[in-house]
Amino acid sequence: MATAAFEEIAETFEFLDDWEDRYAHVIDMGREMEPLDDAFKVPATKVDGCASQVWLVPSVDDGVFTFKGASDAMIVSGLIAILRALYSGLTVAEVQAVDARAELERLGLNDHLSAQRSNGLRAMIDRIRSVTA
View 1: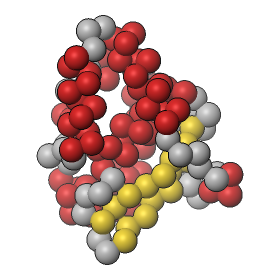
View 2: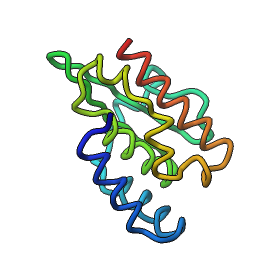
View 3: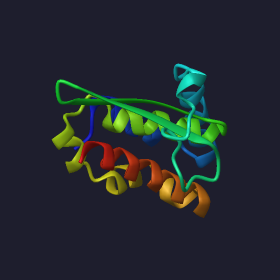
View 4: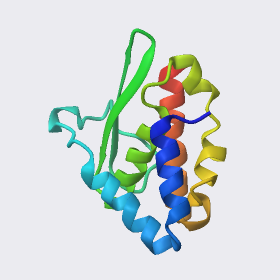
């Protein structure tokens, strides 16, 4: 189960031939995100397990999940943008039903991220799932 926004990313990734183009696209998605106010960059919103600094600020309004996020690493900001596309706008129950690993495999991320980045991505997914549990 994927949102229309995530499907659009998956289609774009299919169009891009090599990983360098995909990597650049991920970075661009991160740059396009609205900056996170420094007031939200606090220990309570920091995601442990990431090599870089990562903050996620979740919100559930009328049962619909959204979140804002930021990182001090460009590629990680892009990964946050991908997770926003994957999860934002879903109900809490739908968030729990998403098979993030399978969806992200469609993008080929697992084959091209370092072990540290993969661990950080898992930590972000775990945080999202724990907030909506």
